[in-house]
Amino acid sequence: MKRIRGNILALILLIIFILPFIYPNNNFRHILILFLIFAGLGESWNIITGFAGQTSFGHAAFFGIGAYTSTILFYKFHLSPWIGMIFGAILASIISAVVSYPCFKLKGHYFAIATLAIAEIIKQIFVSWDYVEGATGISIPIVEEGVVNFQFHSSKIPYFLIAYAFFVAVVFAAKFIEKNRMGYYLKAIRDSHEAAEALGINTTLYKLYAMMVSAAFTAILGTLYAQYILYIDPFMVFPLEISMKIVLLTVLGGIGSIYGPIIGAAVLIPLSEYTRILLGGTGKGIDLIIFGALIVIIACYEPNGIIGLIKQRSRKGDTSVEKAEALS
Amino acid sequence: MLGQVILSGVLIGFVYSLVAVGLTLIWGVMDIINFAHGEFLMISMYTAFWMYALLKWDPLFTLPLASLLIFVISFLTYKLIIKKVLDAPGLTALLATFGLSLFIRNLAQFLWTPNYRFITESIVTDKKMAFGTIIIGMPQMVAALGSILMTALIYYFVKKTRMGMAIQATALDRDTAKLMGIDTEKVYAVTFGISGICVGVAGVLLSTFFPVYPEAGALYSLLAFVIVAFGGFGNIQGALLGGIIVGLAESLGGFFLGTQFKYAVVFLLYLLVLQFRPRGLFGW
Image (cartoon, rainbow over all chains, first blue to last red; front, side, top):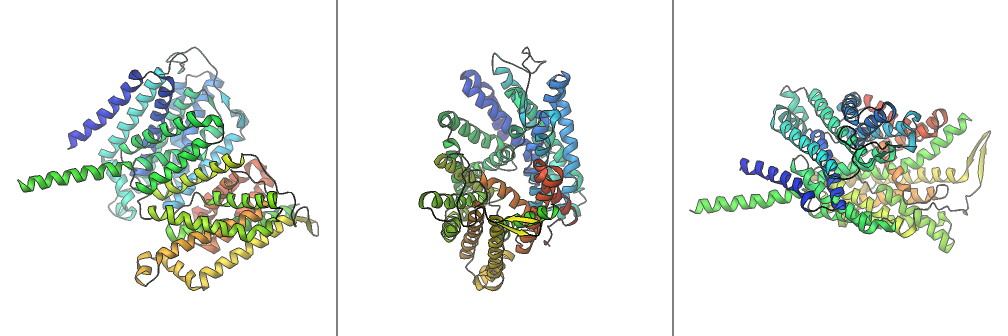
């Protein structure tokens, strides 16, 4: 069974990889890149919320810090976005540690609202900070395309490949954490904080690790997003909508599972992008009306997330096999 | 000048309190974050606007109608959506209410455009009250008084009536409440309905001095989340005090640091207070 599961993940990754080549359409590739970014964000968020049970409604803060750090370093100091990306990840890690350490004593929704408050404060700072161009935002200067400059103008394939590499990296990082000591500790903390402490787990320390890893990956994807769109402003990379989109797609797919964000993003991102492409042109928000209604319907009829449905099916399959074995 | 800032902060704080009371009831009783709370408020504001624009009704005259309308909408939301996700694990209920808020907000934008709309004539428009050097607009004054009255009514209802006690019992322990013969299903539906009345009243009161537009609810629901956590989940006194503190922090922060930082001050205050009271001011 275990081997089959491993193969399913490999198969999913393979299918994603060949998709843009068998279907060379620019809109489709654009959606695929966004899918990879948001699935990656979901995986990062899953580490702190799905595994460790600390609900974060403020991941847009780290996303924005990643996007802004690389952009500012490139815009003001002509530093390659790759180096900026590393600085962004480190900065996001440090900030996440500093702001969440005092919040870890808060439980449940109190923690969630605190993360939301932190993200809003950080957004507000960036909106009124003149050095980073405040609310006007920054257009990343167009330079010669190439890997070093992290800019590609003639094709979306290089962006796809980079997004794919980051996505695979975060999936395996999440998988690695889940399968190792840290994953068990985090899940113990999620299931019972008191019991985990009684067992001698340093809960604050492990929550802190999880948050820092999660923030670093989120920031890296923020840099990628900025380099892909080539324009950022605080309302684009710091809004509550980004934080909530990450939450939504992971919960929709199945929280706390490696597959959850992949399934959730595979449903939500094409849904929101295609409805936007088909209906968004009217400028009246029909796309979001349909999107909202569909989320409600999915939540009502599949409360365990889509992964719950799949698990249910396979469990039914298992029992029938057991029955067959028992009969023979 | 400072007196003026403090008083206007307290007055708007009472309105925040009323919005937060509605949210804290649902949160305390069902442990559900209703992301569509602000959107219900927005519908109420639009109700006041359209009754004014089409039928020349004064917003204060629309108040009972709008409250009833939002009560019905909330009640139906519970019956059609929340009921299905009540026992779902983790954040599923949040998914549903967030989807609902997206739906309502964009439907409003589709039907009524994103334009700001103002109610320019009402009994309270352009009237002012003077307390020495402090001058307060009549709309703000009426909104604050209306909110205080409504909060007091909700408090009385929850603490003194039979249904209110059933709500409290269900909030404490749903299964035991059920065993004691309480119809928890009805309690939930009524709680949702009452929460709707809170924003129904608050929305109409706000519409007399605040522009009406599809995103109007979003800001209030964000503040209401903070206020609810500030006061402690499910605690009406907490929501009342939290609302006043947030109103004060907002207007003082805006006065001393500039309006762009007024909400940052509110959020920062929340983070600071929670360091000393991790379960909110009145939480335990």
